[in-house]
Amino acid sequence: MSDALLAAYDAVLFDLDGTVYHGTRVIPGAPETVRAAREHGTPVRFVTNNASKAPGEVVDHLTGLGMPADTDEVHTSAQAGVQLLKERLEAGAEVLVVGTESLAAEVAGAGLKPVRENGDDVRAVVQGHSPDNTWAALAEACLAIRAGALWVACNVDATLPSERGLLPGNGSMVAALRTATDVEPLVAGKPQPLLFETAAKSAGAERPLVVGDRLDTDIAGAVAAGIDSLVVLSGVATPKQLIEAVPAERATYLAQDLTALEAKADDLRIGPRPGWSVTTENGVLEATGDGDDLDLLRALCHTAWETGVTELGERAKAKFA
Image 1 (spheres, rainbow, N blue to C red):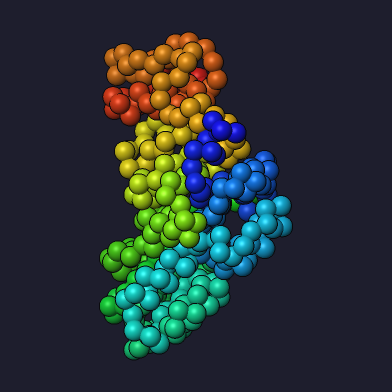
Image 2: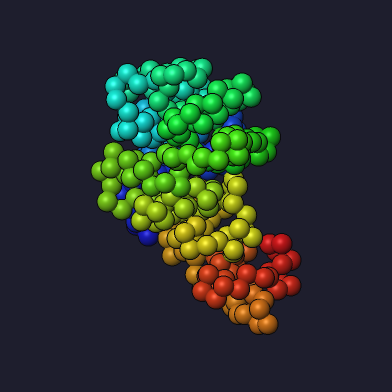
């Protein structure tokens, strides 16, 4: 365990959807890996952009999947969104809520007044994912934003992983309001660093590790916060996206799923890998050698990031196209 990735960090900040579970289906090995972290004495935090559930509901969901947790270990974009509101509004200010009742409860718990319809006293709009968000709710928010209300989006994830596949996320609904208002929201969740910074502070961590499946939120948020990250292929990220990643979305390590936390850190690092040689010829990434496919992907990412060449040669294309 001394050379395992888990042992190199003093806290692990897990994304949830696509990293720990897909809706009601747990990622195989996730309960055992979380348990291993706890047994090692490494604090764990669950950091999610999904604003539809209160921390207690997240705890119940995790417990039902075999991963008991405490509410203090859960950090949601709803909490981050309400924190931004509280910093900018006076006590008792009206906030139009587009989202679940748990989001409205977070607003009320911060000393603000949640409402569902626009009116003269609405000072802000907070928008989070809910499967019950309707056109009517977006219409109320549109009116408020156009009238000058502060607009806070809990997150801008375009999609939401589920056991059935990718579904529309909060970002898709945010895009509709952005189009209707020509206004950009203040974003609370990932990729902004606030969630990770708050989670790391709560764990007393000076060297945390982020584990996530999305480059544009999990990994970008880790980069923004100056935190190392492990990107996993159990959710949204694809090999093509990894190879083409811009600097602000580049992870430190790469693995198939979160169980790699118990593997050797050096084996997971994105960079040159034993058994594989990747060169650029005529603007193409050419791979020669033999070995593990993920090692090849780590090497391809390294060379692509170093050179800016992202087109795959035939050998790599056969595995990752």
